[in-house]
Image (tube, rainbow, N blue to C red; front, side, top):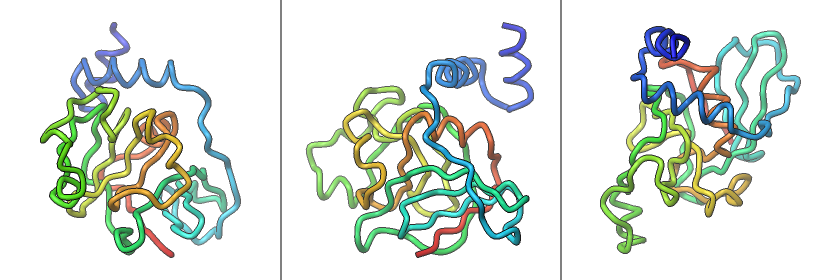
Length: 178
């Protein structure tokens, strides 16, 4: 428990969030990420989302990056541009945005964090964009990773979002390109 308290203090997370994050890390299967070559001009610690590939890259600054498969926004809903990570959350609750509620009126106004049907999954990295995040997924939506399926969010496998969560901090730059 002392290590959990230390992590909580350093990471600025509650004890409960630290226990959940450590449990997720210990229980998660191997990540689907790969180390790949990228142009050495990319600075370390930048997230690049290549929509045409449906991949997210976390640059290492040495001409390599970790590459993860992702789901991107459906046609007309994918975003492009630059932003940054505004917040980090473990098993966040989710409220469907108005556009989702309009298309799926059967959804409740809030789905509790950690619920099996919560589309945010194990963790979320909110972006400085309206209602857009890089997040995990529910078991039902897991197969959507690698497709254009979301309302704008970047959807990852839970084991990958937990890995990415541990590597980035608030303020990390994010760019989404075609």
